[in-house]
Length: 84
Image 1 (cartoon, helix red, strand yellow):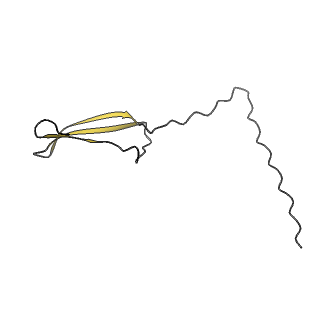
Image 2: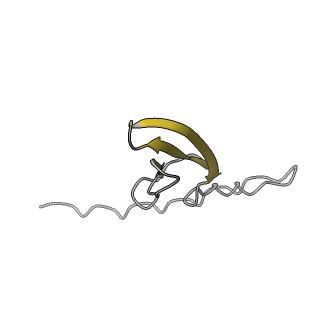
Image 3: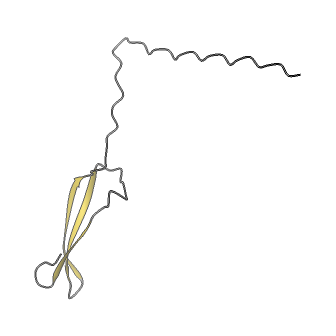
């Protein structure tokens, strides 16, 4: 984006549609560049929430003294037929 005379603002963002970072926050950096001398005049960093970050839901809590239900028994395999 053009800025004051001789300056250009350049910002680098993460494309969360292609790159899905695991961090809950993302940093976005904007540079003010002097286009005549190609020098960085200033830098601004902003942190924003990551729109693709999702927390895993917590496992349901067992009340104190509750027993974990036993696993269902597996059925016995059918007997093999004798071969002749």
